Image (cartoon, rainbow over all chains, first blue to last red):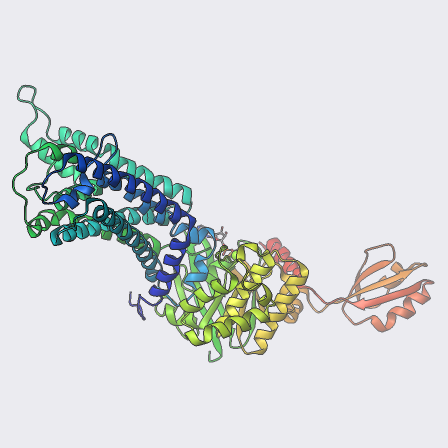
Length: 316
Length: 312
Ligand SMILES: Nc1ncnc2c1ncn2[C@@H]1O[C@H](COP(=O)(O)OP(=O)(O)O)[C@@H](O)[C@H]1O
Ligand SMILES: [Mg+2]
């Protein structure tokens, strides 16, 4: 159908209103405090480990992000856990709260397209997330500078910033998941639950699911054990999870020694004797499919959200 | 039609197999106050949503301010203001901030925004509490704030869905006053209500909705004439003597009902008021007073639907 006028009319008005709402909200303040304390704790613990080991590591700064002092998680492990929560927290009531407050019809009676409203909300939340993670990244880098007393190399800054961008994309995926549920379900509690259930599925059960699917599609032979396709298939299925994509991209970016991505985890990586590090460009190429996957997931989810919202009757 | 600013032709809306609006032909002229009246569930809100392009049309044609809302939604929404049924605001923001947001979405030039908001808020007497959070407002204040948003937009057409529902009589009168003011400014107003009595004096023309259809349409007086017939209704208060029998004997009187200890309601084909005093005195009673009753829309409505139900 032909439509006249720009779909972006009013976009910046929505973005600035929504971003201001997020930044001043008690919800965001709580999340920021949570992130701050745990991140500082994780990095502090990492620095403690690094001081005792005292290596001539070329990538001392990147280790800040990846080293863990048991039983505490490393900074990236912790982020992998908390980033989806923050994304969900900013998105689960984005659309349905406007219906609940009965402000939706007032907004859509103004000369803007629905595109501007949902995209503006998405951008504003992504902007808020971006600012928060950027501040966090600066904080970690600052802590490293102060306590380690050496400045990060240009490559380390580049890898760190790429990691930041990937993390924002990862948050964007969960934001889109939550916003999609906020469009489908009129009740905010329902959409929060649906988002959290999805998160639980991908963060806790997905490896099990992948194993089961692979076992069913390529069953193990009673004598020779699992066929080689089984592991490939399982890996392929795990990569349908944004968590896997983000973890792999993070490993590739923050551990320059990584030459291939598969079913490996930080804990395994740390003990391994690695070959010489890859140049930054090569690492980026290595994780490029993962980054594209995250962005594609974000776009697909946002498209579903948009199609559902576009057809909704605005009776409130 | 040249003067028509809202026009629908054979407009239908179905939810599954349920037809919420059936074959609606509605015409509202420029500068008119048109009342969409009818009980809850009659299809008033659905019609309004289709006029604004907020719900999809199943079939039929809509023209509003010279545009098709499905093809030119932005132009329509620039020139039409809408106050939804039980309007909502952002509770944590002040009235002024709420209006500023919609003003910017509405594309009102930045330099004019504050001035227009102040003017609108003062017209509905909310200027004093403009900087308080809307969460502290009463229902009546919210409803008035909704009207302020309409005023601020300076639209060609204002569509108000149940603007007076759930309000106390004083606030209702205030709102209706403002609506009449708007008419004087030349705005076209479409308002819906399920309380016929409340808005009948405000509307130039009304349409009575019933089960998704426009059952009756016209000026209130004309509707009364068509539905109730040309009947004079007179209420008489008198005591003593056999007043009831005497009134019944008057020429043209078709019905006399005792509605109180001393009160009677008469229906008559002719204006019998000149004869009432003499008749009452002649029967040995004392006349306390009498007056002509204006037919109410409620009566038109119930009579009409009792008749259609009986005919069916
Ligand atoms: N989304 C929907 N699905 C099914 N029926 C609906 C829906 N929305 C409204 N209706 C029905 O359409 C009819 C007209 O509703 P509405 O236009 O809101 O009436 P009014 O505003 O005159 O009270 C009602 O019977 C209502 O139950
Ligand atoms: Mg209604």
